[in-house]
Length: 396
Ligand code: 9MR
Image 1 (cartoon, rainbow, N blue to C red):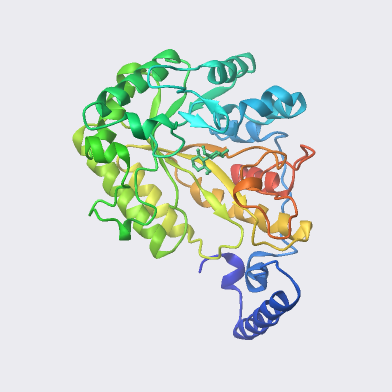
Image 2 (cartoon, rainbow, N blue to C red):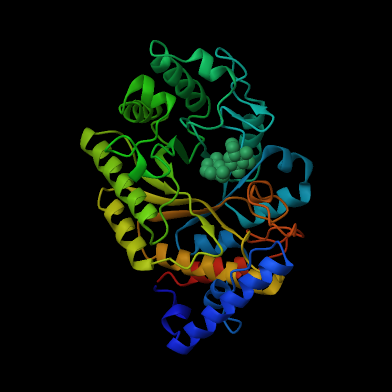
């Protein structure tokens, strides 16, 4: 354990923590439905931790001062209906990731209504918004096993898979060529748990793999490179952050895939690390993560933190304590990551707690609103915002 709080714990603290844990779990069991990991809270929460900082007044400025890009993801419906939110986004960020608009299908948005059709109304709106406000755009995501339209499974087969992949990438990447900072060309191609994969390379069992074999990844990158020679082409995945056998296996499989692609001459330029962090996790090891980042950088690849947020589902209800823990995680994680010079961008998965996918995907059992992002629901900076800013400022 390398978290600073943990290092300083003495034996008697452990005894107190274990007793505290027992009492807390008994309490939870008897009186409440809320899982309350009190030992974790004590490890992660330092009521005296200093989150002050000096300098920039927006995350965009703080990042730019260190030659970094700070960006956020957002849904087109939120930008359309909430000008106050849209305004804050343009103040804080210099890059926008459409959270839905460039997926084949997400929410009620269908980029691919049928095998022969494209509906560009949502992404066109996002690109117009970005141009008007001088924002870079990241394209997310071209080839993914998720967020596919209903017709996909019935329509795609061995015979047409290559044509479907090329047609999609040529049409979408071609339409926005020259306007995209980076594309997530392939998303989440490695199994959730590569140790349990039926393949030695740990690749996820997707329709693309089934019909096209391992080379679908190379094909996707080559097609994207031809359609937009200026975009940075990214492989994006999750589960790379912690000191656990699961994440270690994911890092190993990822490095293996990246090495394989580089050896083949695939036009891949960067790794995207999603970094959906967990508020209650105590197994973050900066040195292990930095080692991994270094190994990636040695392949002549850039690194982007692409979907950063901190889930608070298992954190205490009390807002001040919850915010402190979350802010500490933002600062510790980013300080570790940003010591690697190959990291060029930090993107949070949303900007304000007003709109986080976690409200739906990981709601709190006590029903209280989640607080995983830099701004609160009133669009005011929280301690998490300070934590990010402090990490930016700590870059030499
Ligand atoms: O935040 C996104 C949510 O609104 C969508 O319903 C979901 C399915 O398209 O995708 C969420 O974003 C995911 C991202 O595209 C890829 N990495 C994991 C993200 C959270 O699930």
